[in-house]
Image (tube, rainbow, N blue to C red):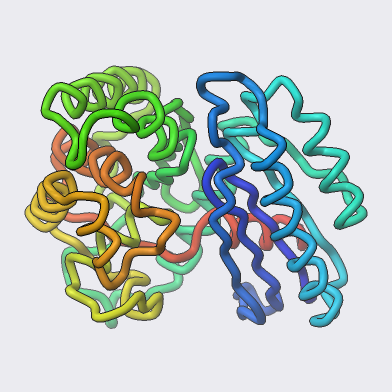
Length: 315
């Protein structure tokens, strides 16, 4: 069955057209555009008209690809920014007009379940004979660091407990780092860390994170940190997918990113232009998670909520 999955997050809108067969997903087309839909939402509570138009423009190009590839079913999922916005009906109407289907503004727990499914199906298929002895071993802690929120999910074959908290690379950048200097001041970074640690207090109270054997990291902040740790000359999703980044590498990459100017970050070979201004906050979220919960490494997945959405269409 050829399906189309669209994930509209706070920072990016992404498309996966894929064939789902024999308990596997085969990519036909995978696209990502940085649209910054959630720009200003933390401050105003509304989706800006310019942000909506950027998002709709990307979606119109995606609908052309869906038609070209002949997908027979489409599901559109929207996450943190649209959950927070007072004018989300404008977003819903625009999406319906482009794709002909109602977008689903999912809850944080639904988002977490989709992310967990997308990230772990491939890990569960890996045979022990092809894996190093240290992993990946369930239970997993899947962490999806988005623009407006971060999802934490613990489970083995299925999600057992989950929580979505309002720390994301865009939200924390807008809240603390936008006018904090270049590179940002120590005071501003302390404020970011305080927000992250407060969120992690809530996570630890609600989700059994310490029962997990393997930390699985998703989304652009994590994959960018991995690309830097691997010293890639350009972004290479095949090299990044299922790579392992040690805790020491996470700490070192985060330290380097936070000490760089905007211009220096823009010169990093694996850096997407749309992540230059928010990667500091994103890497710091990952860094504090690794420190707080004592993981020795993070397994990086290029498969995430998009793949979970694709799987869900065929159920």
